[in-house]
Length: 255
Ligand SMILES: *[C@@H]1O[C@H](CO)[C@@H](O)[C@H](O)[C@H]1NC(C)=O
Image 1 (cartoon, rainbow, N blue to C red):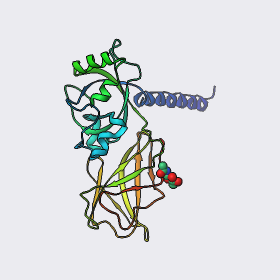
Image 2 (image 1 turned 180 degrees about the vertical axis):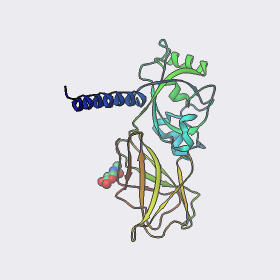
Image 3 (image 1 turned 90 degrees about the vertical axis):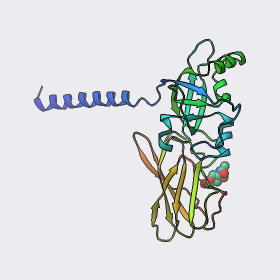
């Protein structure tokens, strides 16, 4: 065999090995072992004062199958992310567990999740099993990130009630499907396309002081380990945006 051919074979083998190693490292579909607790006194809802800033929307989202996260809160980047959580006691727990959406920050004894009592109960095989799990308070679980799904919803922004037209604009992005994070948000003018990067003030709340006048183009950076993509919706934020209003952006993502 000729030397350069061997060199190429060696290179290919190395590349293949590296690829295998890196896919093992970023095994995004694998379950991770942890613990989960439940909120002390909310049967069906999450907290309306959840640290993500979703308000009452966050409390009832996903029929109340929501959760506070500790590490996975990631300074607010984790707000709105969806996880499959299943407890591991084979006498009480189902294989599928429950899908929850992060709407709050919180930690218990070594827990990654504090579920609503409703979501916590939904990990159980039966009503009696649910009562046993609730009584335990903290249980061993496995979790993995899954795609969020909002059938018949476009990405929608909700202008925060604390906004002050036209000087201070704060909003939350609702109904983001898929399993990417929104890691940056810009508002751009429709005339000259000058864009301004917004601040994540806390949780899922994006803010800017003295936003540009006129209709505004929203740009959102969707990120995961492999990819970063700017998504620009069809609809603009209208010129006369109002505190408390919601605006359908006319676009949805699926990854
Ligand atoms: C989503 O946006 C599209 C336009 O891009 C619109 O035709 C559709 O009606 C919207 N869907 C909902 C559920 O509002």
